[in-house]
Length: 130
Image (cartoon, rainbow, N blue to C red; front, top):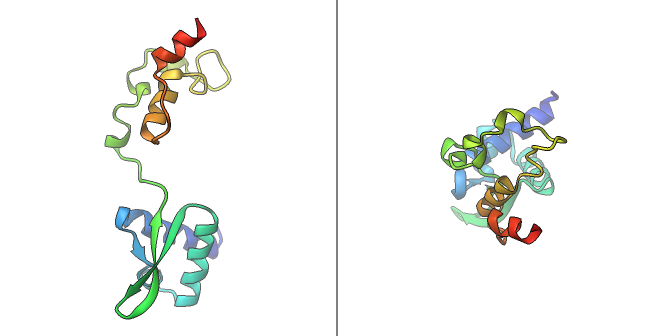
């Protein structure tokens, strides 16, 4: 991996680890042992990639940006109630086959529930197909 890509990956990791509060762009480039110009280039690229938000903020009398990840870290708590963990067909579940995560209404419902999308329960979905 190139030095540039490695630095972008490290920067995103810092933003992700900062959680919902985010991290100041100036703090990020200092932790990367870089400079303001490189920090700005990296944060703009991460923003263009759609993985962070940059929010302008006045900090200690200077304008900077707070970098906040659009992604949330995966934890055991975040997936503990995933229907796959208790599914009897987990060993046979494979994309492209009859039993597939792509076709699973319970998994789709769980994903929708956890991404704040409009919901139709698996039972309601099944009733519509009868």
